[in-house]
Length: 187
Image (cartoon, rainbow, N blue to C red; front, top):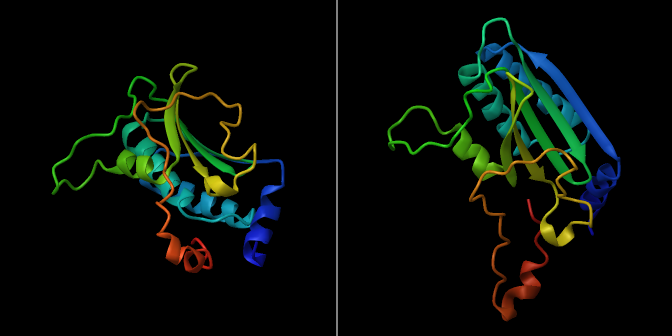
């Protein structure tokens, strides 16, 4: 294990960390959600990507599709073991998010497709009325380095999106190149 991986693993030994903020359902509130999440992850010594992109997409969706005048949305970050969980709660529980099929030249509507690609798991939890929470989880360690508690659903409510497949490790190279491939670190 190299020094960078050892230092990162030491950061994960901190039991449970969380951060929460109420933000206005506006483009400015969505931008602030991304900036606050980035700073919080940085202060915890955790990688910024892809979590900051997931926060940006979920917050933008809350500001665009979950906007109810006079009602804020909540951004919550949890870190449990080697999993970052991003939750965005808005007060428009009757409008559940769904990824859409879009024309190649469409200028918007790809947010949940990005979340689906970047997160290891994501879903929606309804209630209490009129709220809904869209959540996404990002595993910080690859599966071969995960401990027995990493990537666990954190004992938080789960409703996964049907058809979401876990990320697969790339196939191993042929036997003659295996020694070379093991010397490169994953970035």
